[in-house]
Image 1 (tube, rainbow, N blue to C red):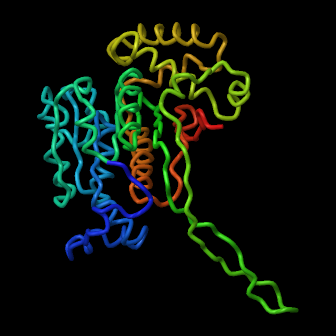
Image 2: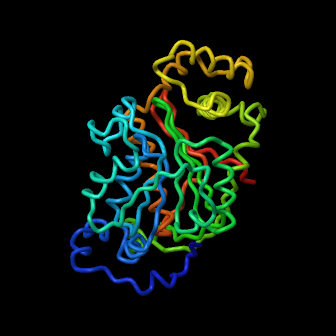
Length: 339
């Protein structure tokens, strides 16, 4: 489903019901009726129903989209209870997507919500083609690259995201994205010889921006001198992301609190191989176990906000890599593959 800045056929014919107008009244006041109509027609895939996936799901359902597909082939574990609030305690051992359905549907009965438990690796272009936005959480780089390539061919907006402990990221692969941005200017309204007074004037301006593919992140050189100069300002977040993704690709799992000391040693080994004498400390590597609720709330909130921007075509989405730094508990945006 390719999304253009012009009204699509499914958007132009949609009208909100009285119940929808009442339910979404505050949102309509915030971003306007046309934006809410766009949300009302959007179909969203959220893959990976851990704590981060639950946070994104909650925010997207409450925004009032048309359809949300919850996808996961993994089971609920004790580790999920750190931040996964959609799956009840008694669902331990059940599929995470199916276990999240009851509470997800209770958030907004006007949204069509369903679950899919087939492994992500078995999903083809026909599956992803049903959606306007695809959000993949907890997958390997190889799988993220495969899905991003499919989404680019189909004109579907793609987000890769993840949280490890207190660290998180998201990457926006939006291809050519069109949006409207309000440009603020100040107009002089005072008369001559009077104290100068200004009036704020907001003018909507249409913009078009190219978002590079996920392969640009995989090809990014973290040892490049121009990036190394940024480390003091931003911290070693990008190095940390590369270390964690290499760990997942190598060991087919994430660092576990059950093997904490051994996994910290493995992370240190990967760090030293990738970036010798890096600014990434061993203390920071100790902050990467399970998914901690505050980090999930921040990263999940940011991802949901970016999805809403993309669907409503209002304001500029992050371009293109968002990093949440576990040491400072602050986020920043790094442009990857942008000239």
